[in-house]
Picture: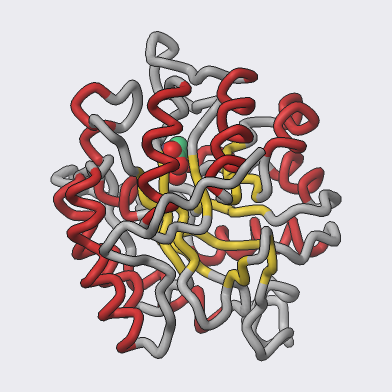
Length: 290
Ligand code: PEP
Ligand code: MN
């Protein structure tokens, strides 16, 4: 296989024909069932996270998302609850039986965040932080690698290659929209990249229509489109009161909007021959004793 044709090797389908399945917290990512991550953009308070975790778990989401350390464009914006945010994620995950995914913004925070998260989220702004990727290649925990907002498919897969070549085989790709000339949406959700990444690579591919569109109205159609494009799952920002959210309110669906998307998501999953964990009717409170 020549360098020109295929600069990434370990990430390629040529290297590994069958899709990679990653088991974490009793869930298989890249398998027959959609993987659903839901939760707020940022952890804001105990009450906020508990309310959202209770809601998303009762509708079948397997993982809770929420930034404890947030990469914000402005230094004046809410930066996250940091250590307290991590503690709240752990508390909600134990209470509701959810896995946790949260972003590690840089190497200096890896040791602190590591014990609190089941999947390490590498943000779009860090996809080209190659030194960081090398270090995460040594880690024995799944990494969700967001596509850089200015990254080509090849750059994205080469970023995944950094993790794989370092020895971490638990890599999940996540399309989250790219910057284009069109500013009518926050980013341009590149649905084609989902199908293409699945063709070119054996790694599981998720879609994040929240960062991808910036608009809560567009989450339902784009989630369905992503599934039809062969996504293995979705990462969706959900808030109990989006108007008051401290981060990414306009792109966070409220509880009614989340419920409203479930039948469409389940129907498209079925078309694609996949199961969906989501249930439109709230399951009985799935509260674990802890
Ligand atoms: C997020 O998931 O809230 C986030 C900051 O994502 P991204 O790195 O894709 O912008
Ligand atoms: Mn966000």
